[in-house]
Length: 446
Image 1: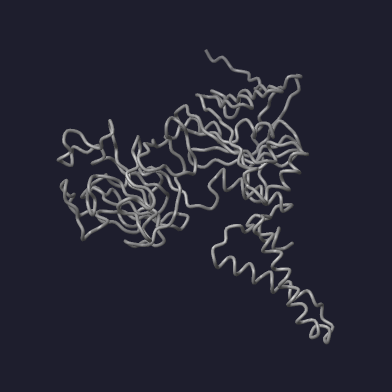
Image 2 (image 1 turned 135 degrees about the vertical axis):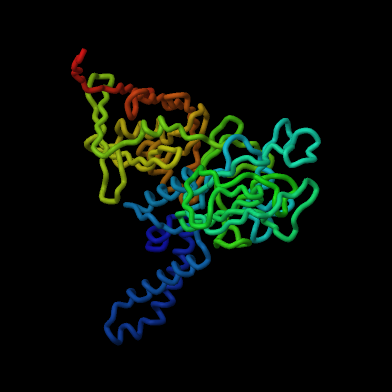
């Protein structure tokens, strides 16, 4: 039980590991039984601890992923929490922002056609294309390439640990085989990993070693230095803050492709993607402050209050007196991630707007609701039993559409307030909540 549902997640593979552990434990207990009985010691304690700890250490040493890092009330809840984190938010994968603004095309992705091989395979190259070409005219000069001299942005918050920008940009048709990376900037993220951006334009670096940069800060310009056949941005995440370090897999926080918004994903080779832009007014609408109170009137004329509260872990949630809906805001995204309670309006809000993109464009996107949110009690019991054997029961994607100050889906519509923080109207198939504002007395000073 400890291995199959507490320290490890309840999955089919972990069930097999637990059964194997039981078999090993029987052998160990049988071998040590005479010694333990001689000294009147409990025969199960030491073998249990020994087998459990050794299995956990062995799995951890080989990079096993199905550990239960966030133990919930039951193994089923722990698995739901893990799957929600993995499929809704990219799990423990490294996530970075795009190093540019506007629309760019993927020139090379992981394990690329020309480079990005071996221990350097986790990298992306980006160029700008118009009408299928990355250059105007005949593409004989650097200035003909749309990407050349475009701003390169910091993809993370962190400190600059290394840089170089004195190398010349190659003329088209030549590459620098000695200085492979060309001009570059390496940033140590606040989360501990390193990001290298290479092939910058000569003397274009806007930062120095020791500078602290934030996501979106200009760090240089796109160039053609180093082993670069044409102007492009090369970006990789790596283990160490030195040139040539082994790369690590990562995902991009968000991007727009074919007029759809993607989260925690990776585009493919030749995909044209667009960087998202933060809508500051949208962000202010969801800057909920402790003890804020939001009042609504339902179909029956009842007043419903949602109060912003915080627990002892520093986690914020909306509270209706009985139920809790936890929320978080990160960068250009506001989202709900945990619901604690029974059927209520807060649970329906989770269905209606699990994620709210804080961007300035109207886009479609998808999300995966946790099964304890989208299923009733009886279906939930059945799916919780089957889920360890097949994660596909969790992977039901629902479509959402952000349109100005509204998010629409098959569940209903949610409208955001124009002048105030929070929601203006929450409309489901079964109910409608309308915002109630406190009456204010104004003094006429005229």
